[in-house]
Length: 126
Image 1 (cartoon, rainbow, N blue to C red):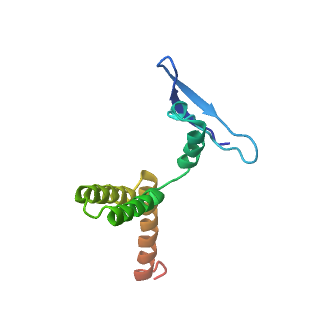
Image 2 (image 1 turned 120 degrees about the vertical axis):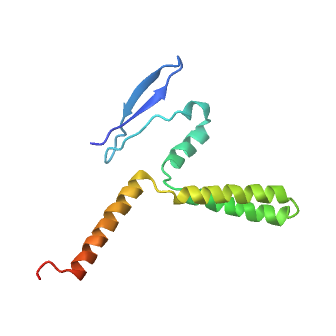
């Protein structure tokens, strides 16, 4: 069973630990989200969906579409285009930074490849 533990602020300014699970099918962890109380019902649904997204692919795609729209509709607004390009560049750079998990996976995969390479150039049965 996987249970996720998170901290959530309460109305009195104190911090309490929240642990909960969903039922139905395989048990899934659910965390209480800090911003939920400040959102409308529709935004809360969107927040649940957004929390499942693991990378910036969609955000980068939206920025590209908006930049294209800005270029078509306001090509003379150089400051707007520079800001849009800056936001896109930062989002792409952020996407390519490795998370600790991705870094660990990369290290393990490289270790495995180097081990196989070593076996090729110096087989163990010689």
